[in-house]
Length: 188
Image (cartoon, rainbow, N blue to C red; front, side, top):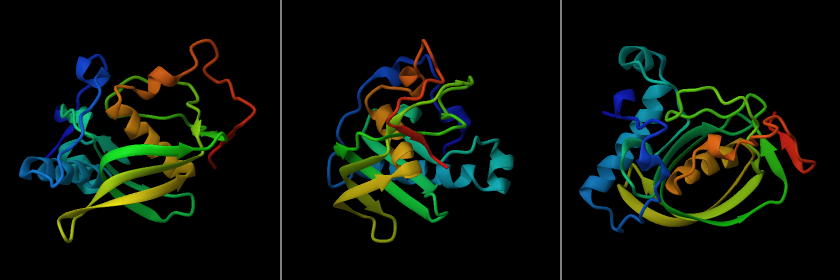
């Protein structure tokens, strides 16, 4: 079980490295990694598990955050309508993104960043990516093309950045952290 002691923190050089593709079909080790990553996300948002294991809540986790430099992401997050989505993503490739930007008015947070970053992180409001998605029932992977918008698009991009050695704090405008470009609208 992944706990906060397994999360690599800002300053560790692993977080600045690029991740490698995962071999398909999945090895047992890679399959266990994506399962454990998804379990962390679920456990972190369960009040009982959160308190028992002192977990920080998360809607996503990327493999580099646990010291695995492979392209794997676990996301469990609601969209703006409150519908929960679950993605166990392997080898994502960003296909397209909108010119329109969006940001979280409360700012982004990260399990790997222990400090507060009081800045708006502007990201494309819509993204399309291709990836293998792991199905927990069949224990198989299937290649899919996914379109996300709004909050889910932000969550995906935050985790995708980890695969490329980028932390959200790296994207903050150093001169004016609260700057809002004309083509950026807040997520409500």
